[in-house]
Amino acid sequence: MKKELIVIPAYQPLDSLVPLTKEIFEYFENVLVIDDGGGEKYAHIFKQLADMGAIIVTHAINQGKGRALKSAINYCLLHKEISEAGIITVDADGQHRPADIVKIADAMEAHPNDVVLGCRQFDTDNVPWKSRMGNGISRKVYKWACGIDVTDTQTGLRGLPYSFLEIAARCDGEKYEYETNMLLDIKANKVGIQEVIIQTVYENNNESSHFNPVRDSIRIYSIILKYSFSSLFSALIDYIVFIIAHACGAKIMAATYIARACSCLVNFTLNKKMVFKGEGNSLVQLIKYLILVVISGTISGWSVTHLSALLPMIAPVIIKVPVEIILYVFNYAIQRTLIFNDKE
Image (cartoon, rainbow, N blue to C red; front, side, top):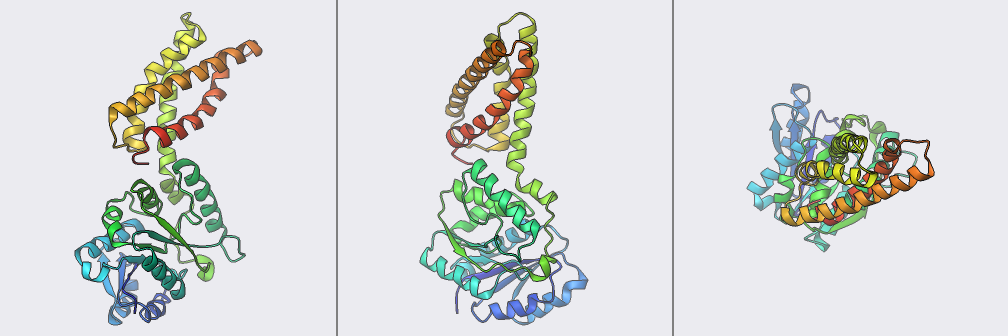
């Protein structure tokens, strides 16, 4: 029997969770199930799980998958005797087969300090469109935005070593964004990642899943949305100052530098505190950021100046828009990798 603790967050589960848990008990000693506020209608399912030996932690009201996982992790930190070998999180919707859960445990035993991800293959016919689309977009976004390159960013089958549990307990997010935020903390804390290919299973087209493609994707991609807000707000300041300075007679390069000087401190503060949550030396980060501002401003001013000469019929304030959009991507990449990279 394997020592890893199986953790199953469950909200309004199907009756199939009972035989699945029974089969898991054939391989693992302990199972912890979080009843995430399912209510009386589902109480009989959790009673059956308790009767077969599962530990049940109950939320009075539904609080989301992230909070359910954090409740389980806090329980594990208080009961080291059942979780010292690490924990394996398993979805309640039947996607994860016991044989694949065992593969995760085997990989954890081979790599005791690494996080192990059970990665699905999304090129099969049985994968629902929202899962295929969600993972495809998520994988590309997180590779570009966060430097994280894993096959399955949204997998719920994960092996977490005990040494990682305190980090996981402090991870941001209460709902589905928690699992992708966890990837950020794995990278920030330089924890190794192992991938295990697992069977791709969707019971009844994944009808028991409570994932909302629009609402929960917004939560998942919050880092991009925060950066976009910070950039747009700062760009508005930059744009207004540029128009005023240029209208008052300043040349394009001078107007660009004046505008950058006014907007850069706002942008730096927002990005450090809200987007990248950089915890390093603020002075060093500010110096790096100011160097980026000078380089970015020079590129912007040079580009607008020369494009204005080539296209005299278009006002410089119009030409500035596409130039700044291109620099938006450039600035994000530099800030993520070189300025605030102590905690991405």
